Length: 147
Image 1 (cartoon, rainbow, N blue to C red):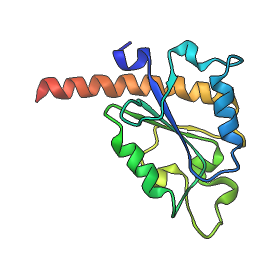
Image 2: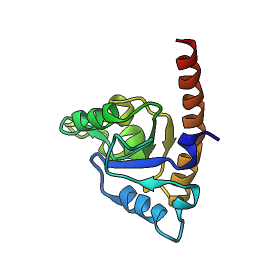
Image 3: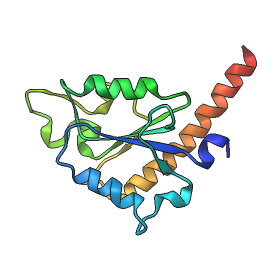
Image 4: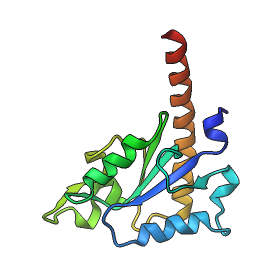
């Protein structure tokens, strides 16, 4: 286990959704599910975040915000699409301004579908993301040693 996976910080952004998945993200953070038992902390600063948790679809108005948050995060970083809207635009798929899921704007590492996504699925996705974060961290360290 690397430093990045011992206490990863998560930044959460709601694209355009019904807010059902946002409620489930908050439930995952509350004592009932207690995602903090894995050392995970919620932050509002992308420069401190290791994991980008996105709910809702990407549209013409928020695509630049999603890209900006992603670009402000320091490597290694992991993106998790939470909920069917973040995965594939969900019920908003045919709306005039919806581009699609989060992967239309930035690379996504883990998909957690559901409408609304269950807190258990969010926790599973974050734990899966921790494994990917560790792999990316090792690859980054190997790259630094080789350079």
